[in-house]
Length: 274
Ligand code: SAM
Image 1 (tube, helix red, strand yellow):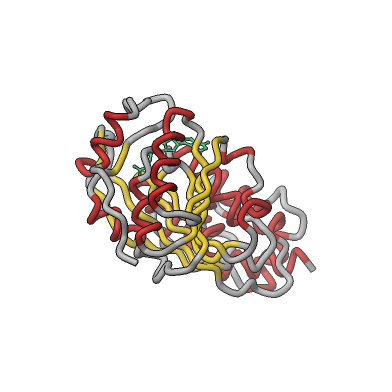
Image 2 (tube, protein in one colour):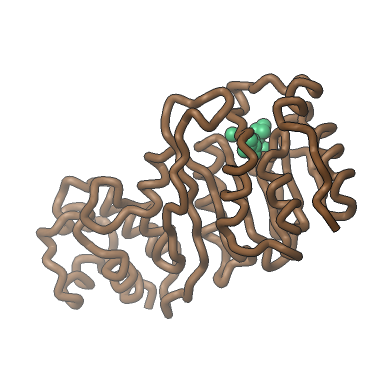
């Protein structure tokens, strides 16, 4: 069946009076080619389930629907709901719209196992949701994450060892997943344009290393990066057994937090989780 023709997003915005709200972090994407490229990042969506957070006027939503996805979309701004329902009517049976705060919803209960998650969110909401999605029991219920962030946050998620951006977020995103920047997006692509550049991060789950408890990994990285300019022998002093594990692993306690690889932190957490 040919994809239904839809009105330009600009018309949807003006017809439904969706003036961008600063408080809700609204910067809309209106370029349909760009939106189609973002929706293609998770791979072929035909017949797949997609969970979208913050659809707004529905630009990314329509790109996923056109790709053949079954989308559940959660939007907090009541003004957007009629526009999204209109979009749903053009793709019968493919779109479920939920008005609500994604931070307060149980997404897994809503969409079940195996959904791709896509979102273009205000960065504080996006970062908190990312941390939540990365902290679920493994393997996760979601299949992939395709998330727009301001570029600085995206760099922290994919940061390699020994770089300035490397820290707790990089380790959380990389210890049992693969995280990469799939696309950089110029600020001028948004309406209204934000002050900074953005990037889309793509994350796919990998295997969980054996015998590591996430709270232990987080405790170590919080201590190490809480005092990132200090030597580990100082910053890890308060974590029982941590200094002994450095010795067991042959890691020099004079090193600083950002010089240890993700695998090093996993190895320490493995010893301490035992
Ligand atoms: N996805 C649209 C696009 O790409 O044009 C809109 C992106 S806009 C940056 C962020 C959207 O997230 C807004 O529509 C906003 O109302 C919504 N939003 C913000 N916080 C939210 C939350 N906690 N739960 C659900 N939606 C939220």
